[in-house]
Length: 112
Image (cartoon, rainbow, N blue to C red; front, side):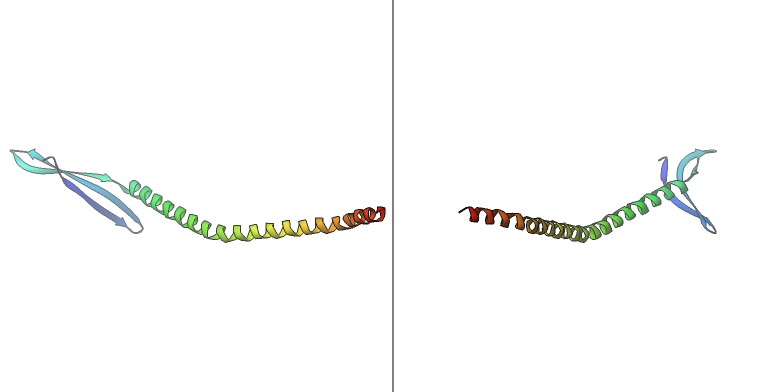
């Protein structure tokens, strides 16, 4: 019977909002009259921290999603460029080797 309940109060002066939690305790007071003791706990900072954590979590989820959406096509584009570059380099190397191969074939043919 000690705990009657928790309530939340909001006190606002212009832009600053104060949050309080009220704990009401039933106590016996003068001549066995039932009375209530109300304890006010300032929960403003706790509420601010909870809000900051929620905002931070939303930002992390948003950036993770955006990052994935940007990274996937960018990786495909980068990999395509690497394949093209490798292919062009291989073609250049093979073309550079053709005169040497042709000279070797010509020298083998002339020895016959």
